[in-house]
Amino acid sequence: MSSNPNYEPVIGLEIHVQLKTASKMFCADSTEFEAGDNENTSPVSVGMPGTLPVVNKKAIEYSIKTGLALGCEIRKKSVFARKNYFYPDLPKGYQISQFDLPLCENGTLTFKVDGVEKTISITRAHMEEDAGKSNHHGDYTLINYNRAGIPLLEIVSGPDMRSASEAAEYGRTMRQIVRYLDVCDGNLEEGSMRCDCNVSVRKKGAEKFGTKVEIKNVNSFRFVEKAIEYEIDRQIELLERGEKIIQETRLWDPDKNKTVSMRTKEDAQDYRYFPDPDLLPVLVTDSMIAKFKSELPELPIARARRFMQAHGLPEYDALVLTSERELADFYEATSKVCNNHKAASNWIMTELLRELNQANKQITESPIHPDGLGQLIGLIDAGTISGKIGKTVFAEMWSSGKDPQTIIKEKNLVQISDTGAVEKIIDEVM
Image (cartoon, rainbow, N blue to C red; front, side, top):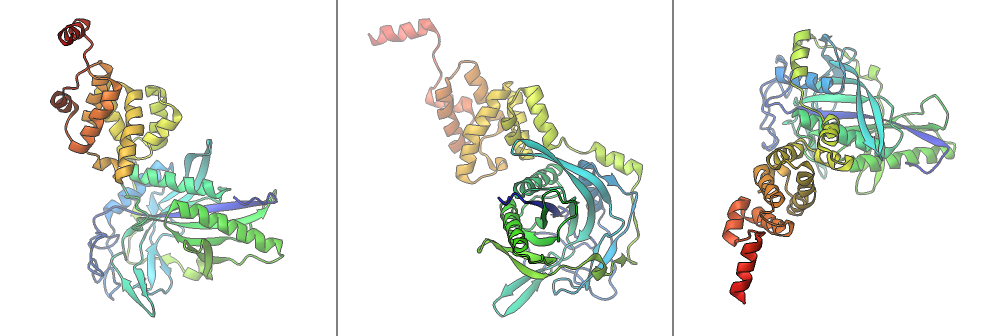
């Protein structure tokens, strides 16, 4: 956040979530990321004349579930609209999106930043199709249409954030939620989530918003924080010199650590939205909403609270363990085997996460499984082995994948606690 105390930043985020469906939003083309250039295309996705779109039912289901997880109202009748603009990676000359009748509205997202709980409004979440991708090669550009038509849910926050760190944490929490729901893999590097940042500044105490600048397609939350910090300082500097802020779209250049102008920002009327005549309205019933609501998993903030209240874990431990759904599942499965919540948390957060980080592995790739780690903790608690020997056994489990009992037996690591047995060994030595 800028050090200038006379100004207040006003920040909103538009997060584009690529839905994890097997086929595209309006046709049967595959959504496989690894496919060769223009392999996942058809007359529909490249906008051939005479083709007609058919809505992906799974994309609607995923969108409703996400809206419910964010506490949104689900519109019983929503409409697809054509967003008209020309760009080489948009083969139809328009994008199928939603405008004045989106699927989801009026939600919230709650998270903690710097120890303070924040609740940010979600104004809307609407379905749309992705565009293709331009690959620039010096003096020419090639277009890959594999991405064209992949289902997106665009989640739009209110202008409620007041610092770059707050915006970055909002984004991380949103990623957590869509991964918990299993509607998106959250891979920012592959473009599964992309973030547009709307930034303005105003004098402290002013009610009217300043002129908004949009920073497009930021692909990491670390860059979200850097881009917003830079943009806040840039705008304050212009205002202090008596210059005006231009409403425009800018791009973040990570090599130069600055935003650069892309184009003047369009307003909604520039896109000439109108209902898509080829698509019927999306009708959602109360029974559908009830069904999808019943299928929602326990979300990160609720799970962290349960770990603190029912398991007695400190807040820090609970937040780390619930940062990824798979990590929280691993912890719960481990503590169920050993019946020692704190020990399970300690072993995972110290020994296991250290090994995973050093090996650059995800929890799903761990050679140590919850059953084995739970058994190891149980053996330590029972006095069969000491904590020090437990670390030796853990290291062997990591390298060999063997269970703890096998390792203890093979290496004769059982701790002798019987006084008579110890005296007998001493007598034999003497």
